[in-house]
Length: 318
Image (cartoon, one colour):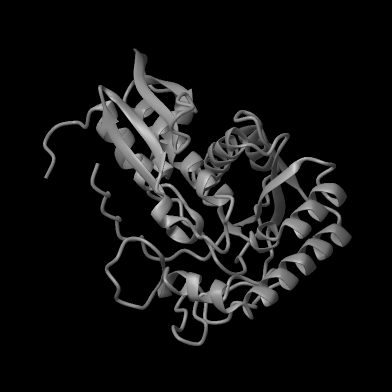
């Protein structure tokens, strides 16, 4: 049991490990080096079929980077961040060092407290956001990191996006190499492994609701998430003006800032990245729905039915 307050570096490393990631692969290497934290990719956790450009991997690392910043700031140190500072090591995405000692602000405290509460939701919601001010705050959170959260309000656009998600998902279910890749990251009930998607985290029917989820079970593992609700939630796209590695890092930080601001108010998110894993569909969404901006994430936001707290995942060795 820890008897003293963690240092800013310790708090930041622990916060980084709790970030969301594609299929909960946790595809980052977080290490301490000369008084700073290094955020690097872990290529062994790349989804070669679903994510050949490593876009989703880098977005995941960007989410971990935001958590590191929050963890450090909540301990009273202003994080000093350098992005892609080593051209000879492209896998080294960021360096974060504790800077000026300043008491944490209200947002940093709220986001730090939300890190262990944030959970990815899979399935319909029990209630919508029903809070105009919160919706505005979430849009502002994305903008603060250089991204745009674009809520969709027109029913035809929502239906069109749902159709693209459905088409991509059902195509993916018939691709043997893709389903085999996904199966490596699905855990049965009782598994103690921290990585991967566990049976308790997805419903038995991936097609419940307007937006189908990934078929994690694949008729091998029955999902155990008890979803009670029929609400789609607020459908939104997270976009960036560019599509470089720097853009993906920004998208990851924006995504996690949105998720923590939402979690602080009891709102969760569901993700539907299937059509973004198909370049033709991603380009179509960019042109017809995003006005030429680059879509980095499709998500739904709403209030899930309360359930038990998730066990704390152990940190990977640093």
